Each structure stands twice: as C-alpha cells, then as structure tokens.
Length: 507
Image: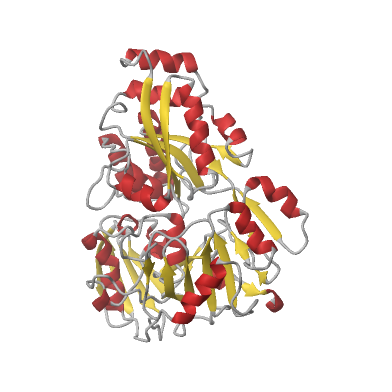
C-alpha cells in the first residue's frame, strides 16, 4: 500500500487515519471532526495523475478547489469565485471576481490565475478539459476582471465552470502541481486505499467550514460502513446496501436516505475492433438483455430501466426513446449471420467498488448474455485499475457509468460520443467515430437558443442509440446513512459535501 504525504501532512493526521481504520477513535467523538465512511478512495487529487474523470473524485476535489461558478445542493448555478458576470455578446462573458479572495496558502487570487487555470487543461490534457472545450481565450483585465471568449455561442458555459478549478498561475507548470485551491478545505494527508484527511482552509472566502477536520475513511464492505455509523465511529456512510435500508429506516438515531440516481449504467462496446465492429454483434448484445430483470435482480428493485445515456432529470433526455425488449432468438440469429453460430466468448470488464451493486450487475449481465450464446469472462476489478485500463483502450467490452453532473446531456455526449480529439471525446471508450454524431453535438454546442440545443441533443442521443456503441442498462438509486451527531440536508445527488454539514447541536 502506497502512502502519499501531502503538503501540511502531520504525524497527528497519520494517527487519526490509523485509529479510524481500526474503528477506535483516538480521543473519542469530537464535535470539530466529521468522519465519512466511504466505499472507495478517490482516484487522485487535481490535477495530478492518477486522477480520473470520475464523479466521486470530482465531488471530493470540489471541497479543495473552486471555479468561477458552483452548484448549490439542488444543482442550481450560483456564484463562486465570481461575484457577478455579464454576457455582452453571444460569445463573450465578463466576470468580476470577489474582493479579497485568497488561496489556501494565503496568496491573493488574481484574474490572471483564473485565466491560466481555465486554459491549462487543454494544454496539459487534464481530465476536466472537455468541460472547458468551448473556451477560445481567457484574458485578465486588471486583478479582478476576466474576459472569456468562446469559440461559438455557448449557452451552458456557466454550468461547466464549476469544473474549471482555479490554482495559482505559477503552480500550473510544476510537477506535481501543488494542491493549492480556494475551497473550504485543504488536503492534510492521503493514504491511498485507506482514506484522507481534510482540514479547514483558514483563507476561505465564506464562513468558516463547520468542521475543522473531515476524515474520509475507506471501508469497502457495505455492512461494515453501516456498522461504523450505527456504533458512532463514523457520522455518515455512502453506498448503503439496499438490502438493509428497510431495517435502518426503523432504527432510532440514524437517518437512511434513498433517492433516484443520476448515473446511467451502460455497456461500452469497442466499435473499432472485432467482434463489436460488426453491427450485428452489437445488436445481438442489446437483444440478449432484459433490463427490467436487471433492475429486479441486480438492484433489488432499487433503480430504473435506462433508455439512453442520460436519465429523465437531465436536459436533453428524449422521452420518445424506448428500450428494446428481449429477443433471444433474434440475438442468436444475428450472431450466426455475423459468423458466430456457435456463440461468442468475450471478456467483460467492470468495477467492484465504484457504482451501486456494480459487481452484482456485472454478473447479472453476464448471465443474460450467456442465454443468447455470448459467453462472458467477468473481470470485476478495483476502480483504480479499471479506469486506466479503459482509458488506455485495453478493454473492448466494459460496464461503465456516467452522471451528467451539470444537468445537461452535453456532458455525456461531449465526453463519451464525440470522436476523440484535442477538445472532446476524452473518455470515448467505445472508439466511436461517427460524423453524424459529431455534427449533431457541434450543432447542440453552437445552438443560439435553448430550444435548438435541446433538439440537437435529443437527435444526437437518438443517433447514438442506433449505433449501439453504448448500450444503456439501468439507473441505480443512491443511498446514504446519517448518524445522530450531524445535521445535514442531503443534496439532490446525495453527494457528501462536508461544508454543508453541521454538528447536530448547531441545528
């Protein structure tokens, strides 16, 4: 196990991690520390490798770094580093920074820091580059004013800027890049695979974070995470096992919260290599699947059937798209036509610690495919190994999830469906290159009105459905458990944002 010591790390932090991992608080419960029991570690801290474009990793990093805008618990856009902005023409935004902003090391934040930070992802290939692809230029005008020019009209730029994390200009070219942000917390220490400690940023622009310390404690076993909360050793737990929710809802002293998820789980099929370069094989995969049964068996009923790459709550969702029914005879016929009359054997890669019941979903998909003659070798691995495998193009068939955190289908289309290039398609793990999909995505991104943007997004999703490079499966619910020492109004996505939490005594 590799232990990474970060700026401001201390022996005390190491003791906290070790004691928490053993479920024995070093000094007993403390009102100035909150402990979050989580299923898995972050992939990294921005922008240094092995950081992956993963929703949970972005959520954690948003405690340390900020952009010009942010999202409130209901996912509405609100000012962050920017105090206000104006849009003098369809391609220009002028932002005024808040007065007195400082980085976590005490240095002032200047407009040139913001400009350099917004341009750096494209230059260095950082995982947030697709969110900022429309930015053509970012020019400081004094210390507190920034002028952004987009390549074309961009109706959703404000929804992408929360991922435009701002760091000091002189830190951007360092390797590794110092983790100096403006968020409510800073990273004290990180022991990979075990957890990390965040401490209050004394230079934060807003009210001081309610807790002086936030310990993210990695516990892969769901029932053990629940036990940590019910025994008082942790304050919250994520990815609560669905099968224990009913019991927890009647248990005094804890609050179990379950909500529809934003993550669509789907199969990615590499269309640029055998066997999935044959459209008949891809269609056979889809016809072999019974999505209703996947929701019932793998998710225990805690989820919904997915009909496209985005759920119904996301702008651009097309209600006319329907999931095809299962047709095993049709699947076998297509396989035979494609030269696989005796069936097909393929590896299927996935995670065992990233998405709700991902291991169970992987097994259920494999069982269904086998009935059509597609024999699957399951490969459920740690997400720290899975994302590099997929990003390197070494997986031809994998189970993946994607959440449009900006609330717009362009998130998924820009990153998953556009032909891989310098600005878009960063996580196009299906190897898809389709001129019509690209044209529709470009049309959506360059639309002059919200109506035309939505129409083009829907057309792009429809075209993608016919190609079957991605086969949507299910939208799992999310569930968390809250202990009695914390007062918290769970946000729309149930994301663990410690700055929104309070000691229960402060209700």
